[in-house]
Image (cartoon, rainbow, N blue to C red; front, side):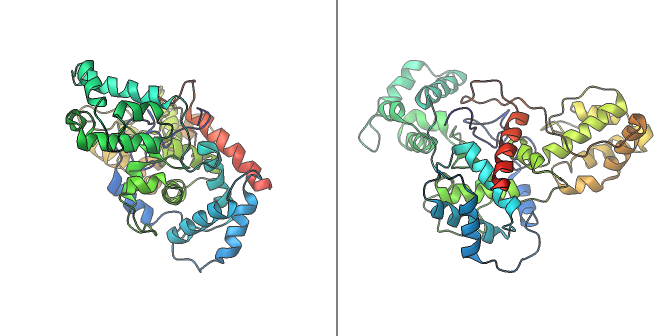
Length: 388
């Protein structure tokens, strides 16, 4: 996998999702911090809505296979795993949803269940050294730990040098954590591999979605996320498992990369900026993670300058912004009043969704890439699929 295919979801800053905001800053090989419980609750009432009549599994699988690129190997297997995920999550298997999933798969892995990451051994070793340095552990001790024989007879250093996929690297880290004295200090609960499978879904997001998983769990949800069936199930949940106000799939693709409701929130930030004259980063984060009430983030500070015009005090503003990781933020007085002020100033209606302006950061990314780049690439694949 080259950096044309990314390890999303990349930014876990505010909500789950993918995942999630994984946030890439923003996305992994390394990281995490999603609001997992909220993600699980939201997923229950997501895109799928109320129970739907059972669909014809054979017909759905045939339609999925028909819309895949002609060069895809094992089309029947991919189609079966996707159809099962749709059925288990009560997601409508229409052309739009099918093509959305296929576009993300093609972008993230090129239909490889466990995609190869170029230069992975060097990336992994740099991350080990970075963590060791942050913990003031001498490099010689790290080298000694990696020289220990692992469970398969090779040293950890040998296994690291031969690792080609994130699954292999994750298995090395898990083995290290359990067997090497420095392992727990360096890696306990900090496995740097945080995305997995053909849709590069956040493992933290997958773990939050374990309830309702339709397959026997082989060891752990982490292990399942690296499989084709598990990676597809959890990736589809992250992509389609929540309701949105969007009229274009482009904004859902941006959310897949930047976190649920990031596109809706970026548009709101743009409206705040217009209403206040304060320049804001349109990153979709309405509240700075962990911000104290007396030390608000950039967007919250800007909104507070409108408190008189809004007829809302700082506490009411904070309470409304805290709903920014849910669809119901659209129904708050704050949302309506900010848009009213901004549109009066602009003299025209304003968009309710914008692709967030986020630069993607990851040890695996070697070019200047953004959420807009990701969303556009996926949307191009989506449009091709819809024309098939």
